[in-house]
Image (cartoon, rainbow, N blue to C red):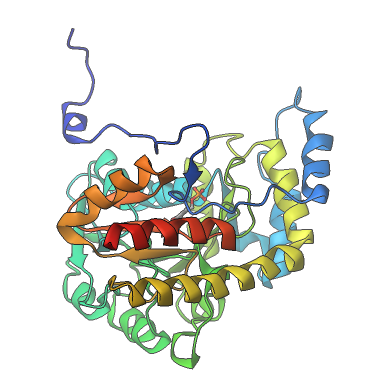
Length: 352
Ligand SMILES: *Cc1c(COP(=O)(O)O)cnc(C)c1O
């Protein structure tokens, strides 16, 4: 049967969920291994007793807690059910058919997909040879149809970061009315040297067209509850709030996010361990002869080219679920030492 569904959607791939199976070690989605802290679980349980009521559509308490933590006003914050939805909503408020959404590639798969769902045109600028966002080439690719730019920093799946100098030069070069979304889903894992210490909130005060996207899914360990936020100019927040799906940030997510902010120190302390493990795993992989990009996130990227799919398939056989990008590379989440060791054992065996 052919129903009246937009024919342009035929060219979009259907979502293929990450394969996981009983007993498998899942290193495919950049989640944390640890379950929620007791205080977070308590907040979720308490909120569960009230789910006969709709959630607070304005997420007032969460927005106030975020504003206080970040030193911004509540008018500069928009929450969403995951920052992936905020990416989508930024596209919705800026772009339609004939418009261009610009980003580096390879990067987060939501950018091209959500762009095409909006009927707009994705413009993908290749990363540099070091797998870093090529901001010069991106600035050169801006046209009068460009409506939105994504900079993923650290970049998913390569883990690489841009320098503050390159980012500031980029922002200076762009039209001041062009919205630039800085996707900082992995910011808590960055251990920058001086050149890479991007202070996004300070930059945002300098460039009102900059939007900072963050999430509770990664370092804060709430991937299953779906909550993220944008820090942006009040004009952008007002537009985002118009396309916000009512009640989409559920009450458990709001309560958990507030509790997670309260336990920030404890949660962020874990990222130190991940950063150490990332260095250890990267060094071990390089010693084994693997190419590994310089990651500042909770994953590493192995640009294995044609071997990517076979490498990930063999890993699955040995009980490890990785994230392959056929013909390009494999992304592997860095978690706790025992899990990382299981991956290293596989990587060692693959070489022999
Ligand atoms: C994981 C991730 C997000 C956030 O996802 P949500 O769970 O929707 O908050 C955003 N951007 C990138 C690049 C990511 O990898």
